[in-house]
Length: 148
Ligand code: FES
Image 1 (tube, rainbow, N blue to C red):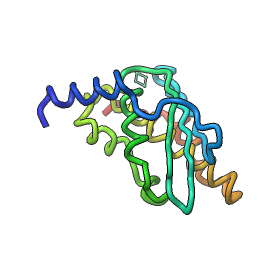
Image 2 (cartoon, rainbow, N blue to C red):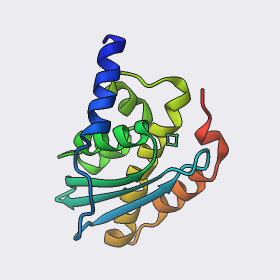
Image 3 (cartoon, rainbow, N blue to C red):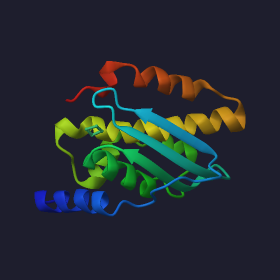
């Protein structure tokens, strides 16, 4: 993929982000703040029959944070919860064509928002707080946000 295409795709998702806004009847909500810069993502998930039916987001952050949040909502559509849990910052960076290393933490913000929303769903629907607790621990671990 050419550098121009990468820039175009990133800008396209930044200028025209998909699935922006709140889901009033969300089954899982993930709130994550990036300790490196203070940017914030809130992700909403509608879940049925173990699959993500719909994802929306509200992001207060940089271009990369908005673009990765946007592409994340497309990537999780119709995924099983198990498959969604496997998505990482690298998958989002690859889908956008590769972000510069200095922007890796922006994609990490989207990954953690997804895991936090799934953790919130498991806590609500299954009284299982393991994932929610793990994500809180990981968000506060500086090694998780390292740049390279
Ligand atoms: S600079 Fe904060 S998430 Fe991108």
